[in-house]
Length: 345
Image 1: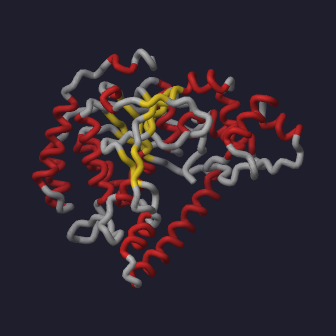
Image 2 (image 1 turned 180 degrees about the vertical axis):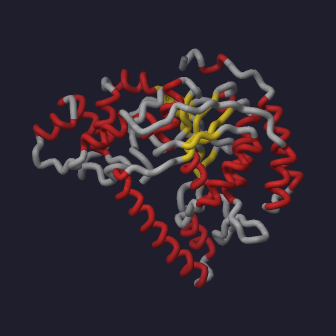
Image 3 (image 1 turned 45 degrees about the vertical axis):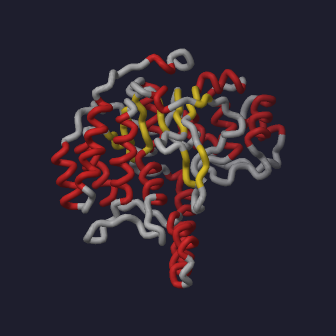
C-alpha cells in the first residue's frame, strides 16, 4: 500500500505535459527513487550498477527524468524524508516483510531459470540505502536542482511547500498529499506516456492529471478535516488496514451523512476504528515540516556531473552531455505560462 487511495471519488483534470510548462513542483524523493530502483533493471531483474557493483538505477532515473521535465519547462524540487513517525511503524514493517519475501522468490526464480518471474520479484526487493540518498543529493546539486530535507514525511513537506507558494503543486501518486493540504497535486508526471505496472511485464497508458484540493472539497461537499476522516476510514500509511468493509464511496457517504469519524463511531459502536484516531488526524492536519529553506534552480554544472556519473559511475558521457544540454535549454524557457490558469490559479 502506498498512501490513501481516493481515486474513486476525486475530481481530476487530465492535462498535457506542455500545459505544465513554467510550473514548479515538489516531488517526494524517496517514493521517486524507489520507483527508479524498481523499474530500471536488467531483464533478469539485476539493477544497473557501476564497475564496483554500486547500484546506479536511481541516478539514471534522476538524470533523465529531471532533464526530460526541464526540457518541457517543468522545474522540480526533490523532498527527502526525515525520521518516519511512530504512526508509520506498522506500514514500515509490512513493507520490509514484502521485500524479504520477494527476495526469496527472486533467488528461487533465478535458480529455476524463470527470468521474467525473477524480474517481477526483483522489483519488489528495491531497498534505498544511505549511499544512494547521498549520491542522489550530490547529483541534484550538480544538476542545479534544489532539494529539501524534511524533518519527517516528504509528502507532508512537499504539501507544505505547495501551500506556502514555494512551488505550484506537489507531484505524487499518493493522495496523502491532499490530506496534508497540498492545494494542487499532479499525478502521472512521466514523459513516456505510459507507466509500468508493479511487478508485472505490462504497461498502461497514462496522462498527467491535476487534482485541485479546493475543487475536490467543493465537489464532495467536505472540509479538509472531513477528507482526512474519509482517508482514515479507507486506510492510510498510519492505519494501513483501514476499517474492514469500507471503501472510498462508503467512507464518503458516512462522513457526509454524519459529519465526522467521532459521529460515525457513536452511530456504529462495533466499527473497528483505530484507537489513535486523534493522533492520525493531528499528523495530517499539523505535520512536522520546515520553512527555513529557499528554492533556486540554476544551470547544471556539466563537468561536475560528467565527472561524477561518467568517471565514477560508468555512465555514457555522450548520453549524459546530451541530457544536460536538453536540461539547460529547458531552463531558458520563461518561468510562467498561462496555459493552465483558466483551470487553476
